[in-house]
Image (cartoon, rainbow, N blue to C red; front, side, top):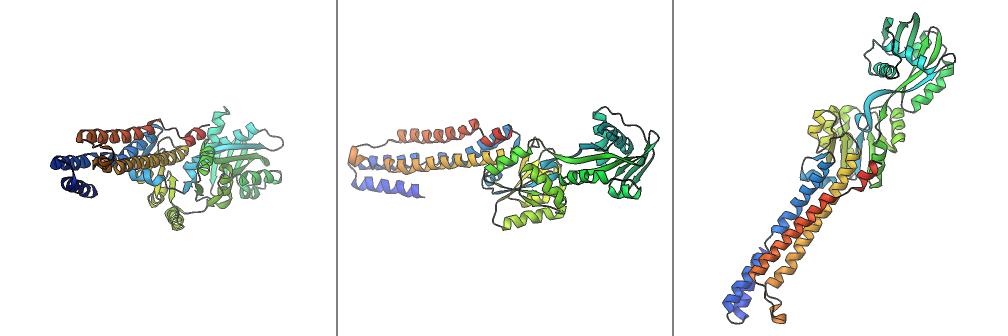
Length: 401
């Protein structure tokens, strides 16, 4: 409407006060104002930037569902990370084997793996897999018994082998005094430690843990350097959660959170006035991903989580979160530059098209020149948006070091 009014006013002023032929001057200025103010550049400013940002993110395995998600990601202040499968691998692995006097580490692992071989428990399978990878070839045990809440008992190479917690050892009369300090240390590191006894002797300790992904520490450090508050959310007990948090450099931990309460915790964080991003991979993370301002799904996780999220990290690495946010910020900067350029162009171009320079310099812009100038403004916006194709995120480079 402002442009239409300006064009009409230009016509009236030139027709009333302009030199002869007044009608010709009036028509030329009115048409020139309409042409030079064509909103092509303004209309393309944001969409082109968003398309460029989404495409750039996809090049590095970050799939952004919508332009709205890309815009919102630039405003995030807090990132909530689920622990299992997001910060960690989500699969238990053997981390430590400690032997008591009279045994060596390989022998302890051999007995533990042999006794655990028939078990379907994830921790037992982690021990068996570790023994196989070291070429220890666990034996097929006899008299296998699973003891709920305690561990397992079996006969391996004619010897009774126990693998379990302290209560099992106490019940069987095994002296574990010399190994209790070792177990306490391993548990303080967030690991599940199990005693191994052969016959009536304590042979050693095996520890299993859901280990941290190799690039989680670097990715979290980069997010924190970007001014983001990083919070870990987990259903694990406080001791285990704090142990993992220390490994990755997170200071705020929400532990012992039930699966159905994760979305509520995100809601509470939003209630603190924060723009919250949630990163998860499991089915029970889906409600929290929806509740967050922006949901990030680990691409190697459950389909339900991916469907609920706004952004999917195809590679499963947390470095994609930092990259997505930095691309988002760069995209919004680019969009604002486009809008600024388009508006400034119109602000300066319309008065010239209306003939403001004619009384002073005798310059009157023709419709042909106005059309060329309008095209140049559109080319400027397109060229600026294309700069995103050469964008190199500092966060992505640092997270891959």
